[in-house]
Image: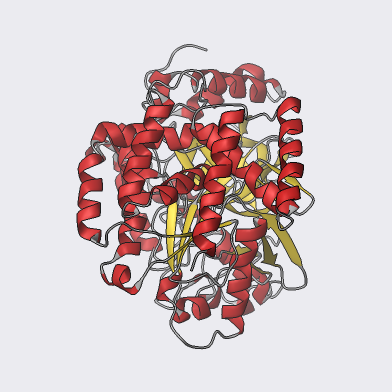
Length: 621
């Protein structure tokens, strides 16, 4: 394959060349995949590819290479398309085959027409996912990605792109599919009327017809299109992800996609009434509307490479070498700096600081029956009225969002509990999964401010929401509502619950805050002064990297722990198996927080001291 200047803007030229070399045999697909897979491992190439998350769509060219990071919010039915189609020269009658993969619009050159009923057309199918920006992604993460994003000059886009922007404006007024945008590799100077006769949609909906958007399905109360974000007020650009091959993903997976951008206005269905399509019912109309949202709002990305992300920290490489974490430096020093900052944030309470470090590093690493091992939810009680009046919970949330990659604060008011949708629900009419507040990706830190709850009555929805939140905290699972049945979906969401007294929801551990002073403003001013750019970088890297450390409990330590537990039970019969489980979880978190991959006797002893102090504080008057 000869080198091409800035091929990231014209990936279809690569595909066309391989197709011409290999013909209709399957080799062109393998060669294309191999080329892109190899090229997209080079940092110099990746640095040229803009992020859809950080780049306005009108700054991007149709069919150029883009990157996207997001969460799989819904999985649509497989989409059928023309993998190979035939075009014919109108004057000479000569025909040729063209590839339809990685396209939504089948195109041909000047003076050619598409033979839609050709026996040489080969159908194919591709996976179709609805992806949204990462819910709860914090501003510092977006800012770093923005700084790394290649500069895209809006003025450098072609006249074709200008026509695209005009057509995008028309989409918002119920768009006509007659508008067209030339493919980048076919930039001939032709009129839009001529182009209309050269283009058909490659993908075919199951019902074979387009329908008008149902306001009850895709519009919110404010008449804006519902992009199905779980967090109210969330912003960003979602996308339709189209995957070729056997690679599959699950709901809520965090993925990074590199693919070909498709933002052709012709993807918007032509508005029509049900009586104009007698074979199409209301359900089909709603489904077509949801699955054919304007590409100016929901671009399509035809994936060349997709990978699940173990983390989304832009400060760290994709694969973290636990033996070499240069950005963190000495792990114990990084831990101590974090402990001092949290101790200041907890108004001098060193115990709360120690245990919240463990909470921030907690993650479900295995599931046994109904038990999710590795979770460590905390109820931080003792948030008095005096602290609330100083805005303590808001300042604490701001601090945590500055340290972790993704987080969200739920202010638990009666209104929020009774009106917010927590549980995702299947809408069979539109054939999509309506999102809920608890549809979050793994390692999204969830803070619940129970101090905002006032006297009043929870209605049926409020009780259902409270139960769902309790299931996430205690079992790390959420039952999605599929109307006729429920589907259990595993979660991995660390929850920190702030309350004045003991919370109404049980957690893995309850800490009663014991402040040495009550001056919230002074405490967080000191915290801010300590959070220099260098310290922030170390802590952010520490909290991401250490959470991914491997951990092993040797047979010798297992026997030691077992013997110690038996001896403890002799002196205190109230100690239960659940206490041992919580102690082992805490010991694991203390170990990895210190950069250790194995439990040692010293860590076990210090863990027992922490747990005993926590229990004594709760049980004291």
